[in-house]
Image 1 (cartoon, each protein chain N blue to C red):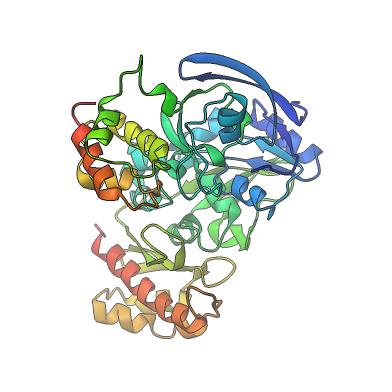
Image 2: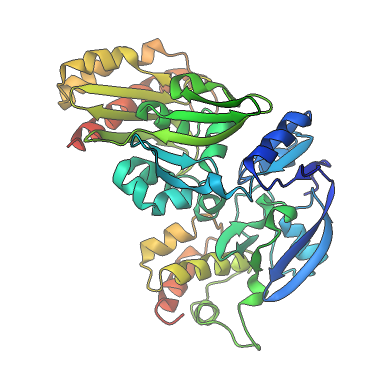
Length: 281
Length: 159
């Protein structure tokens, strides 16, 4: 397929990438391209300048910060997450979920930064990173800032990363005994989610987030409050989920009505919380 | 600062041969392989990233060449289905495809072979389940999956 003509730059450093992004109107970072190249084919996106991050090795690292946060570079691929000993030790749910994104070829190219910056409501990582309480490090010519997950995802294809800025890493707290869960309903195995939910349970506290029901992941705060007593029996979790569906206003489309998504939100939240609670240490 | 351009030199090693070519930045890798290099064994099935017929290896990893710009592959080593057999001798996997009747119309076969070759390189004795996961991104519209899976499992350990 012939794409619309596009300018291309391949910077050698993060500073240079930010400088190109800040200098040229309509410049957009190109990570693995597993979403962007496809939407460019459909002409649903028409960036004027692609800034290829391929040579920025510092964005491909997985490591730990001095205060113990798991730091995942924005160019880390799903395949890398699946094989990372750091992820396995600190937050294995990331590898587990990454292994269900797309297929082998997509996982070899698709990146963490691409997944979150696209902010497609049906993506896997936004809802998971909200439940895990991740933070996002964004760099620009003015310096570096860190944004919590609850403030990162602003809408469909919109995040806190604005023009001239680059997401450099995602920071995830280590589980420290917390259990994590992920559940939902896809169109076919490993297909697009109709609704998904992620949960993290630590001691008596649960964080629960629902995806695909709004422009950005939704924290199920009322359900979290009801679970604060620390009773994670199936009955208690089901009771806590009641009212979650009614609090949402999900879209209706060919894959499911809004009412079906409200139902799925409760079912998925229950499954994610039970899985998370069962994995607590 | 690297000024943006609409045409760029791409230097790649394709099936062991070093190639340098100036290409428009909007050209997809699959068109570079098929139209610029004349290696038409790599097929275009859907052109939307779903079918996997265009699967090649970039630095040893299976990728869909319709979801990559040619310029993104600059500096890499690429293998296509033409690079599998050497001196006319089929690989054990290709031989197994022949013996197990793992192709009907043959359109998906290059992509299947490249995905399965990548699997066997990292997991020489895959289970049936391993094979099914590995070819999840490759669609056979003749639905001949059973024979394809049998062929890859049979090639395991002999590849």
